[in-house]
Amino acid sequence: MKHFSKYEIEKDDLKKLLNYESRDGFELIKKNDFESMLEYFEQYEIYENLIPILTDNNSNYWCLYVRGKLKGTVCYLSHDEVNLEPKFKNITKLINTIDRNPDAYDFSELDVQVFDYPKRENEIDLDNREEIITELLTELEQVSENKEDLRQQLAFSILTLVKSEEIESYVFPLLDDEDMYIQERAIDIIGFHKYEPARNKLIELTKTAMDNGKSAAGRALKELNKINTAANNGYK
Image 1 (cartoon, rainbow, N blue to C red):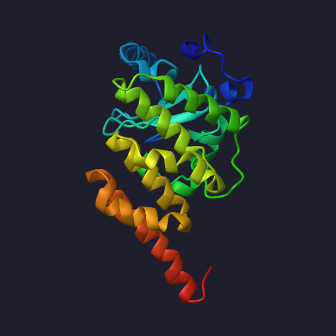
Image 2 (image 1 turned 180 degrees about the horizontal axis):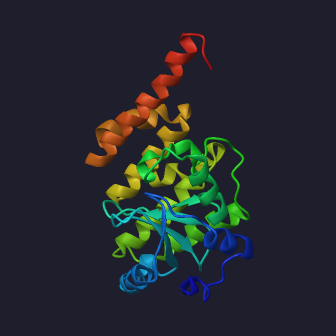
């Protein structure tokens, strides 16, 4: 496990990682795979702050931010669709979640509610969260528009760290972003939070958004309608 030693990893997190017992779907990455992934990461700017820590041995990885504004948080790297938004506050939270879900054998079998981010509650467990969002927003505003991949990852991370009460400040401006994937993710986050004040905007987006956004707006409206249906049936 010496390949982890050169990085600044919190002592408790490193201990948790080194003592982790691998199981199907969540295996501690081996040295040769670790090194080959680092070589791959070095080719792309979006991966420059990451190292892989766990894998399902199907080309999907749990990765740790070892540098940058999100240092210490953990994201999931899928070979199908790249979204590097943080999912857990740290390694310890990731491993505790894996241990509490013995019937899950890959990322897709973990319920969205087990992740630290996004959270529907207005209490989000991340030190200096507002400062991090502000810094990510500044970087997003400054990055060249031709760096689409980097813009997407910055936006995705901002969106996942937002509280429901902050949606109009941070999410609404991205609903009209010219990047199809940023617009789609912003709409999906509104659906995740079931943010009723966005209903009229979502209805508008079913007609005016890009193709992915139109579909996302439809999904988000269904989430809002679930609340109304539950309320009409006497549920909260």
